[in-house]
Image 1 (cartoon, rainbow, N blue to C red):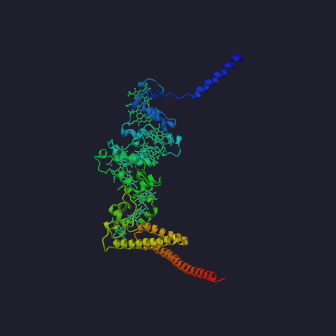
Image 2: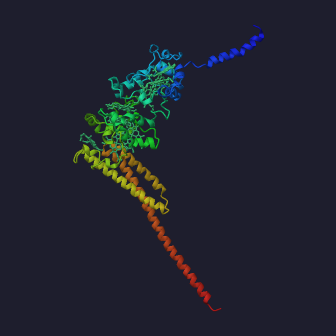
Image 3: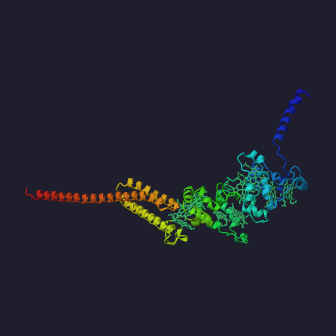
Length: 416
Ligand code: HEC
Ligand code: HEC
Ligand code: HEC
Ligand code: HEC
Ligand code: HEC
Ligand code: HEC
Ligand code: HEC
Ligand code: HEC
Ligand code: HEC
């Protein structure tokens, strides 16, 4: 080959190498399926937003078969591992073939968990699935099959603000849940709760939704022996007090959840002071009766809460009036904040179910509220004093003005 011929060939070789490097692996599955409309073609469209596609995986990685062949029968040959449509009972293993395989998954993301399948199998969903129930949730009920999104994607069906809707597809449907012995009101009740309000209205992602309490894949969240005791994960102070108090052992013996007895599990509403004491709305009177130690404690704590609430509102009222009249009371108002903190604190300490513990914060709170009230009263007294002073000086000014006026008249009326 002469020098000139070599020169002509060079770009051809470079182009050839380029095309090799950029050549897509043949994907006859997508090529052929993209020609269909409906269920046969939709997967190709839906895969465009799929995390698996984004990670370089294809139809064949899930379904098996041979994507290098153009013939339908040969490409979709079960002898080449082709699975058209896994039965519900086989879905966990279908997804788990990768997701339970540490070596495989860690190549994509070293931090990714590989316990979804094993945890799922321990859940009520997983156990019923094994026993032949086809209506329970499997991987694809919660994540979808084509168009699976990263869990951190706000459009994912398992993103915090979408989870409740995803579970409710089955759990809120009376007909679907017919035949099971459990209620179908979890979604409705949850939507009414302080937790849902915090999550949906204030976008507070630390507030729980279904999977925060029930676990992502059915196993209870770490450190929780029973879902009935899941609240302490987040409400640490109340839980610590409860554990040390008189109810822990008796609730355990009665088989009652630590917190849900008084607060419910799904429909947790904003707490109020009527929840303690001897009244109808009290949570204590379902077990304690007049005369027993629990009842006495309940009514005593309630009375002290009322004292503090009243002292706070009296103080705030007079300080507001003084402020509107232009008196300087910002220091007293600031101090009163501390008394309101005592009230908040007392409502937490209720969970010790001990009068002495609650009183420890009520007493100082009351002192502050009384001092603030006093400051308000002083300001109002001073205001009264200033007003009187003003009236007296006004009187003297007018009196003097009158005298001056008379004097002028007297001078003017003198004959010249
Ligand atoms: C030449 C066209 C062609 C190729 C190539 C092809 N398919 Fe298909 N595929 C079809 C047709 C037609 C059907 C529907 C009839 C049938 O089930 O055989 C189908 C059905 C399917 C189904 C659904 C079966 C069901 O029961 O609903 C899946 C899943 C599927 N193909 C996946 C694949 C995968 C994965 C590949 C690549 C390994 C592939 N196909 C390659 C034409 C093709
Ligand atoms: C993440 C794994 C996964 C990938 C990737 C995947 N599929 Fe599927 N596919 C599934 C599962 C699971 C089902 C069964 C869904 C069911 O039973 O509801 C399914 C069902 C189907 C069906 C039957 C749909 C129906 O409604 O009748 C077709 C056709 C299909 N897939 C084609 C494809 C094609 C084509 C690709 C690539 C573009 C692909 N799939 C990629 C998991 C996957
Ligand atoms: C009842 C609904 C449900 C079922 C069934 C389910 N998942 Fe999940 N999955 C979730 C939720 C909720 C998350 C967590 C989202 C988050 O972290 O905010 C999640 C997270 C994941 C993650 C991200 C990593 C992780 O563990 O947090 C993967 C991967 C995953 N699931 C795969 C699977 C597989 C595979 C199956 C079947 C064996 C499955 N899921 C079954 C609801 C479900
Ligand atoms: C061929 C292997 C394979 C199969 C089969 C497979 N996946 Fe995946 N999946 C992956 C890989 C790899 C990732 C990316 C992991 C990462 O980057 O964290 C992933 C990611 C995911 C994620 C997002 C995880 C996150 O942290 O955001 C979900 C959800 C998921 N897969 C669900 C499923 C479901 C449901 C099935 C069954 C229908 C399935 N996968 C089947 C390999 C697979
Ligand atoms: C595909 C429908 C479906 C979806 C989606 C689904 N579930 Fe279920 N779930 C069921 C069925 C059916 C049962 C069986 C009822 C029973 O336990 O008797 C069940 C059982 C349960 C149980 C056990 C109830 C008991 O005490 O027996 C819990 C807890 C549960 N699901 C929570 C969830 C959560 C949380 C989600 C969403 C992350 C979810 N489920 C999504 C269908 C579904
Ligand atoms: C704040 C925690 C929490 C949240 C949020 C939560 N649950 Fe529950 N759930 C519980 C507790 C606690 C129980 C009772 C468990 C027990 O008694 O052992 C329960 C029971 C259940 C049961 C069994 C049947 C029943 O009603 O007693 C199902 C099903 C269930 N929850 C589904 C859901 C669904 C769906 C959501 C979201 C809409 C949800 N849960 C949100 C804590 C929670
Ligand atoms: C994942 C964390 C988490 C879990 C689990 C949890 N909560 Fe909450 N809870 C919150 C957050 C966040 C708020 C909102 C606080 C606020 O109002 O700013 C809240 C609010 C509350 C309130 C209202 C507080 C107030 O002052 O208005 C009560 C009562 C409550 N939760 C009880 C429970 C009970 C009972 C359980 C268990 C069945 C539970 N929580 C489980 C995070 C959690
Ligand atoms: C589910 C039933 C139940 C509820 C609700 C309940 N208790 Fe109790 N409580 C008990 C039992 C049982 C004991 C141990 C037996 C006893 O001393 O009466 C107990 C013990 C106590 C004790 C210790 C009594 C002693 O002898 O030292 C106090 C204090 C107490 N409860 C206060 C309360 C208060 C306050 C409430 C409401 C906020 C409340 N309890 C709600 C069942 C309950
Ligand atoms: C025996 C009934 C009872 C039990 C059990 C109980 N609480 Fe309470 N809870 C109350 C009462 C009463 C209040 C005070 C309401 C008020 O005065 O505003 C309250 C208030 C609260 C509040 C809001 C005020 C605060 O403390 O900041 C939260 C949050 C709370 N409880 C969580 C829990 C958790 C978590 C558990 C379980 C560890 C639990 N509760 C167990 C009766 C109970």
